[in-house]
Length: 323
Ligand code: CP3
Image 1 (spheres, helix red, strand yellow):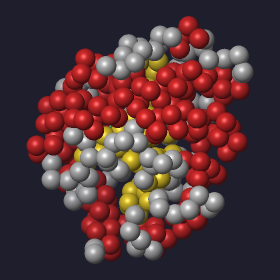
Image 2 (cartoon, rainbow, N blue to C red; image 1 turned 60 degrees about the horizontal axis):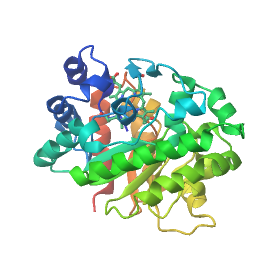
Image 3 (cartoon, rainbow, N blue to C red; image 1 turned 120 degrees about the horizontal axis):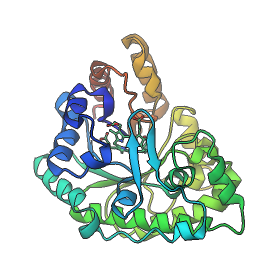
Image 4 (cartoon, rainbow, N blue to C red; image 1 turned 90 degrees about the vertical axis):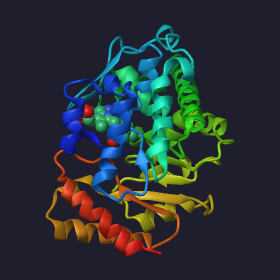
């Protein structure tokens, strides 16, 4: 999840008014920003400072990230000609700054480094809508139109993310997370028909990598079993379902053998500490201290969060789950 971001004053100071896609090209800055949350909190892992739009930006898609808004794409995708503007990622040539940042970080870090990429639906939504969308109408319209290049687009994005993830592992990341932040806009049937094939393509093509893989979605409680693939070790969930219910849905008809990540509501961290504590304890209790539970927020840290609350939260979780 976004661990840096606007809630850390030291991050805001370093980034200044640079677009995050520009900031992410500077390995010294990437290393520093990745380490910042770890200097304040005893986190169990670090997440690389980058963005899901980086590989698209690096392969020629015109995109910027507007603070307080999100990714804005110039010339939104509508046609097969637009899809053919995408080209495969050549990691050493296109994202050398990411690989260099990972190599530098591995020298400094004492906890595992998590690399990540966007899932095809979430990336496609930015490309098709041209900006963040609440309803994803144009994306669904393309998806539902049998004459549209939807499947070609989703496959191209799956391939882009798969090569990006592979390059991150080759450079030294020790776990991977695939973010499908907006797939929760879909019904289970539509997810299965229009999205799952490209997810299978993505996960099958990284199945040989020897690192744990987390598949995260927001609002995906209605189709958790569909988010499982052979290569997926952990499914990340938002706060809408208690973890025990999410876990029972995850294993239903598919069997166990999967971990679960989540799921404190990020907005809970804006509350007075006793409320944060009560809600965090409820998450831990629903997880029942099981191996294979990764405590996390159900989505990214909100900018107005007091870092002191997160510091206390990390300490609470460690105290309660110490083995
Ligand atoms: O915290 C970290 O440094 C981890 C790195 C990270 C970022 N983005 C940096 C970032 C990660 C893992 C992401 C993933 C990402 N980016 C996702 C998937 C996870 C999720 O939160 O759903 C998505 C959908 C994006 C696209 C994106 N980038 C959005 C929606 C925004 C927020 C825009 C805003 O200001 O409201 C961004 C910007 C962004 N990416 C920030 C950070 C730290 C915000 C801070 C800034 O503007 O400098």
